Amino acid sequence: MAHLWSGRFEGDPDAELFAFGSSFRFDRRLFEDDVRGSRAWAAALARAGVLSADDAAAIDRGLHAVLTAGIVDGQGDEDVHAYVERELVARIGDAGRRLHTGRSRNEQVAVDLRLYLKRRVPIVRTALAACVDALAALAGRAGDALMPSYTHLRRAQPILVAHFLLSHASALRRDVDRLDAVLREADELPLGSGAIAGTSYAIDVRALADALGFSRIARNSIDVSGDRDFVASFLHAASLGMVHLSRIAEDFILFTAEEFAFFDLADAAATGSSLMPQKKNPDPLELVRGKSGRVVGHLAGWLTTMKGLPAGYSKDLQEDKEALFDAEDTWLASLGAVASVLSGLTPNPRASSRAASGLLLATDVADYLVARGVPFRDAHEIVGRLVRRLLDQGRSFDELSLEEWREHSPLFGDDVRQAITPRASIEKKRTPQSTAPDAVAAALAETREWLEAQGS
Ligand code: ARG
Image (tube, rainbow, N blue to C red; front, side):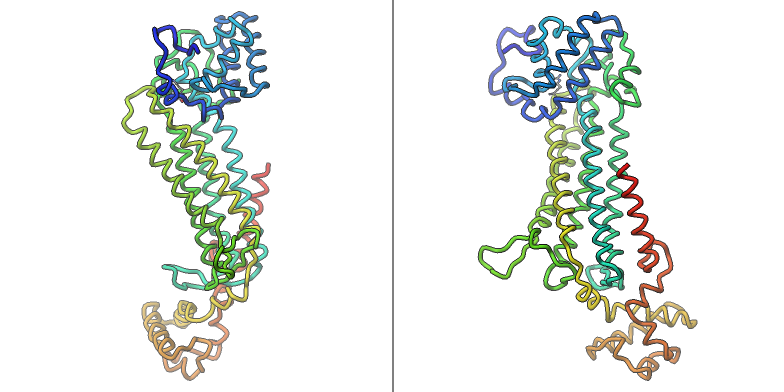
């Protein structure tokens, strides 16, 4: 088979080395982007007077036919660019051989990847919103159920279950923002850069950018041929996105375990054990947690690949695609799995509220004293001693008589029993980001508004 560059060579490339260097196996995912970029390039060549109107029209029709036919074979092709060009020439003959005038695969692969991200990122964005939606729906189902919050994985303070769920929604919304930034970075036309030094044809790059939907034009042709920062940015967004999913997975692995039982896992979202009949394992969540490692690996791998490259294109850059595609696939599959597990969860308010009572009200006891004029540091000490006593006796605040309270401070009054409850604790919170029921209701409403706006 002749290659895009066969003229300069006397012999054929070694078959194994050619296969080693070929990227068609994976860059075939850029097929429709490559055709789209090539059709716009042919039109730009015609506008510049480089292609006759007839040739340009033949190329356009030919490329359209190549696209409609879909990928038919391509085993022997070096990459998707070679495939499309060969198929075009097979259809329209000589005119097809004029398409690559003034253009290089170095900028072509960059434009294809940017077009690819521009059409795929919105799909990931939608999957993220679906996960936020599942969290908001679960928060709705949780109603006014309480649970403990944890720091150091030790009981900290009572919170609304909905407040916990919306904390994960906040992280996923940052992932959406990060994807928007990736889109802005990808939104730049590389064409007109040639192989590295620019092109000698008077291409109207502004019009070409408009035709392909890019808002900016690349600043420097050398930079274009070696720049894959936008791939690194996507991999970073995917890595953090997977870190967030992994932490969601970890929380629900814990909170659906027998020891917590704050939520019940749907049968459909679990698997059994081949040996132990009682088991209900959260496999999908464990897999999401596990897969986060490989996406982070793609980011680390890609940064390492880029770091030693000289200015301009080097074949190393071809490694960008497998990292990008696998990160995207893994992220999308994990988002789907997490959304599905979340939508099958049932809150178990009895278990979670039970865990939200007891000594985790100690901060509220200290605040009670502060409200009666005790400096916070002194209150902390007084309550610390009280907690030590209760721990020794295996008791809790709600079991103390008024006399016992007063042994620790005369400021404790009759109202202490009503003041020191999990419900009173959350209702005393004052800030908009807090677990106060009004604040959480407003946060849930705001999340739903955000979701509405995503649909548009
Ligand atoms: N398959 C190549 C890549 O993905 C396309 C660019 C090839 N350019 C070149 N000069 N060999 O990077």
